[in-house]
Amino acid sequence: MSNTEIIDMLELTAKLMELHDVDAFKIRAFQSAAFNLDKTSEDLTKLSFPELIKLPGVGKSVAGKILQIIETGRLQDLDDLLAQTPEGVLEMFRIKGIGAKKIRVIWRDYGIDTLQDLRLACESGEVAKIKGFGEKTQQAILESLAFLENQSGKLRMDKADALAHMLLDVFEKEFSRVEITGQIRRKIEEVDTVQFIVSTADPIAAFEFLNSLSYLEQNEIESTPFTWRGQASGYEVLIEIITVSSDQFESQLFIHSAAEKHLQVTGASGWTLLQTSRTFPTETEEAVYERSGLPFIVPEMREGGFEFDWAQKHSVSDLVTWDALRGILHNHSTYSDGKHTLEQMANYCRELGFAYFGIADHSQTAVYAKGLEPYRIQQQHEEIDRLNAQFGGSFKILKGIESDILSDGALDYSDDILASFDYVVASVHQNLTMSSEKATARLINAIQNPYTTILGHPTGRLLLARAGYPIDYKAVIDACAENGVVIEINASPWRLDLDWRWIQYAVSQGVKLSINPDAHEMAGFHDMHYGVAVARKGGLTKNMTFNALTLPEMEAYLRKRQPRS
Ligand SMILES: [Zn+2]
Ligand SMILES: [Zn+2]
Image 1 (cartoon, helix red, strand yellow):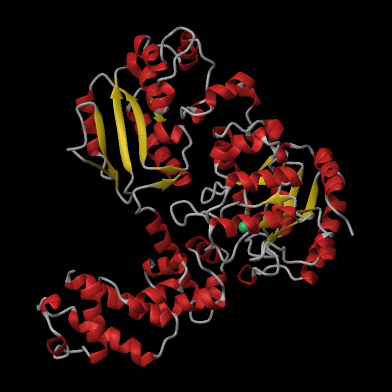
Image 2: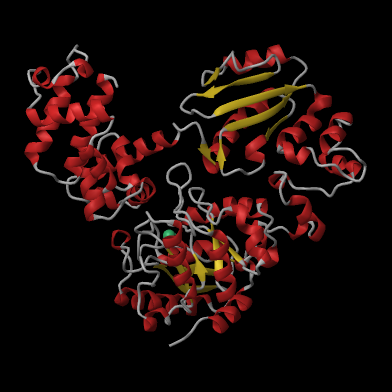
């Protein structure tokens, strides 16, 4: 154990004490010890109790704590504090410009306990309104959050895609042919390698060009004469640029687009896809599948899992597309924590060519998100009736709600209020730390509620930020099948929850999936592109996509399904 480790533990204890509003005298004892010990040249692990209390800033109580750390490697006070602190709140200490006191306000007074919720609250301007915060602090939090997101060595799909396209624009001016391949082409939700294939007759010149770009930095040890590896400034993710001659381009693009297990599949020809592609390097991907005696598989499905079984029953044209979607069901407005008004959201949805817009603002338990009290629901429904009258039938706003699933699995309105909605998205937002048994029982209870139409973001995961609560997927999906509940594929690139790996099981049980953007602003609708990408990756067909129903079909479904008052 080094001095730094000991000091870090004392500092963290002081911060958490401040967060939990422990006696100020105790906090000062830890702070002053940490501050003074930072300057000592003595090896703390070699000091006895009498020697420790001779050091400036170290009192008897803290000296005892230091000995406990040295002897056991832990500190009971710290463990206790950590047990009372949600993961997301702990992460807030990494944000520059806010300390324990502000974090305490954000968490205790506004119920925000994840970085994702904090970002949303900043984006909707709520944080600036908090006493003692203001615009400047809000902006500083947003900047710091953006910085943290780029530092993990992995990028969420949306960020990876943006970075890849920025580089693609530059490469296209230099090389006769460039394509993005690898994990991005396969629509993987967390990307650790941003990969390109570039066509060049002169790899040395290609490397010189890449190294002339100020924002790229080559890692020479990891690179080979034909593959440039390195990083882009501001990102920790690996960038890999594979240079190939033009006659190898098709083959290399294909090989790098697929997982190893996919390439090893043997077709009727007796050859694997890898063998075929290597032997006929100029052939298109379609031709390689055909020559191997295998059905064509779209890039996003090339994982070496269920895709060839899937292709026995379906063709590529069965897969869901953006154009197959007819409406958007899970959205927020300024009634709760959204940025745009109900009318703005609905109009934009209509402009995009959709036939229905489902509003699903937060319910009353979500106080920090301005969840709707009953009188606000009534106001919203009156506004919807007025707007729908103006739309005159060609477009419709559906009355929904995102109702919190309480700890026992109940929804947080009485039945008569639930009966006033066209549909209900039931989601867990609070008390996320639970065992798989508890979480599964909680979800199933909500699924069994006759008012639940759609199960929202089933695990609560936030990619690269928070693991979801563990659930028994099969039990949850089976309960949805039994109760006629649709499962959401939350299309926010933060969530992509239901995980695409469970789509086939859901479909096999007859459960439909709804691709929902969970939009908190108009631009949020476009997140459905990520939802469509992972839905296709999981083999979701148009006819099992809930929001591919036309408006009359959706209305008929909801009329039959929803209990009415
Ligand atoms: Zn939600
Ligand atoms: Zn939502």
